[in-house]
Length: 73
Image (cartoon, rainbow, N blue to C red; front, side, top):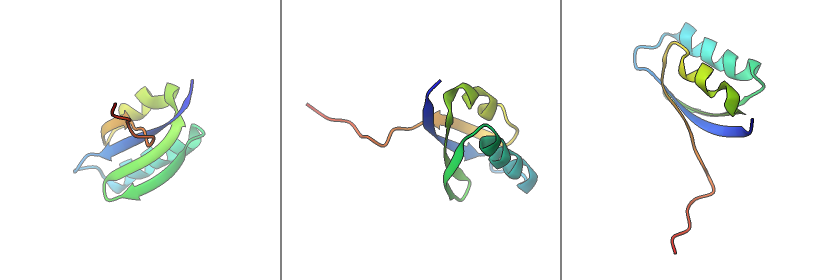
């Protein structure tokens, strides 16, 4: 599966332990944390692990993002 960049939104009531577990999971799957801003993460990892990340306790949203932008004809 391809290595993609994802936006991960942590729930408002997530504990520090849940966030730590999420960060550890991304790193253990061979991914990397690109940026952390408040309760939002940008991380890159193999897309085959996307569903596992989405089902992790404390995750509100995990969706792919694209930095290349769109071209409008």
